[in-house]
Image (cartoon, rainbow, N blue to C red; front, side):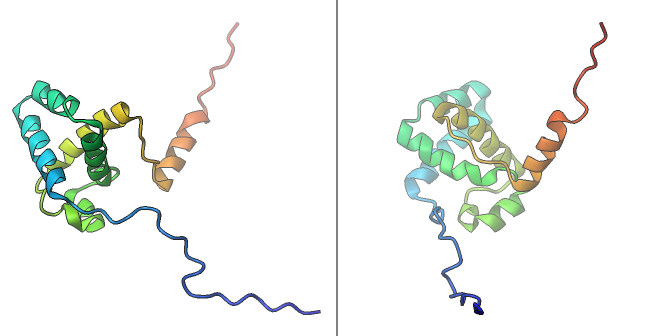
Length: 136
């Protein structure tokens, strides 16, 4: 008996995207401007502005800044998420996003998974050649 391969139906084999597309809302834009101005003022003002956010604001700001992770330039960020074009204008904005991510990921206990290439590089470094010989 001969079995024919199953027909592939277009769209059925693709996994549905769990993440909805990012959109920059007006309240989120205001939060970003407030935190960004505090970032320019001083480290103390920046820390206070992040600690004064409520849980909903902190989560929405986290969802904004996670798009800057693992990107080498603002061009890569804007290419990946065009909705960020109005608020990201310089490398200082990108560095601010990374600093915000570090604070909020610890506060909210949320982490973004490493990209495949970085995960493999980290796995290669972790255990190879690191064992110390017993010199007793």
